[in-house]
Length: 424
Image (cartoon, rainbow, N blue to C red):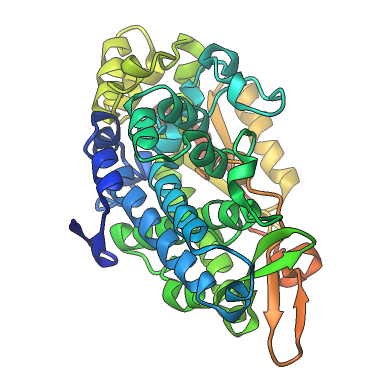
């Protein structure tokens, strides 16, 4: 069947994709906002994880076709039947990569329970060093322990292969990704999760459209059309033709700008921080039971906060939209005599002496950004004229630009006038 997307127009969905989309677990994503609290800064920023997931699956298919229509991929000894299987698993993985998101997407990561409580260690190849679970962990549990598992098995698709594409710590389907001694796992993982993955392409483009900004409007069609592959020993990796070099730079800069201007907007991040304060003071966590977890959408979380609002000040502030207000912002890139770290620290000391409660937020620690572990595999840059292949992400300054770092101080609106006298 076909559906229609705001960004890409008509999208074809096969029988398996449609059956997954029709499940209540997947339909839940309609009620999970893509941008969390960002609607308080960008009123039209109300896209959901449902449309983002469909978009990622569509782009994954386009990326796959671009790569395997190139002469290099055609020269590889890959059977046509295996290639069809790879594409199907890739698109399903892209469709399901965000199915485990909690209410308000990344905003609710602070409410995630301990990883050990999810009881999914059997799907990982190493003992995880982190203690707190992430939405990717819930995705694994949903794929392996719900009706989605049965739908995949019915179509002779190994659910573990799908999981291995979206969770870097998983294992168990390595043989599936091999054909005639060559492993395609790195390439397929990179399409889902890398510095130039389809996830980032879709959310940058989609978030820009919904928020009404221009920073993430990169030429994804041109970029994907220059996707290629490269073999190192017996592994196949993602490569990009050097003709797309400036589009790559635009993509990376666009992500940085979206992060600072949209995802770290002062009106939305304070709500994220207040939710963290609520998490620490209430000690309440999202349920580990998938059936219970699947009921928790954005509205259910707000209802929970409303129930707590009489006994928890942070819950009260969130549901009644009474946040702390930005008092001061320190930009580490654009320093002046008045704007420096010493003065910033003096301001905090003055507020502390006056017993004025404040919240400090740093862009490196608090901006909403994907929590997933990016695949460690290298992305190569091909130059057809020079017949060279290099890894530009390894040591080129072009791809390691210093991001702006911003520190902010927020205070209660009732303390704003008293706090202003300490500004320098």
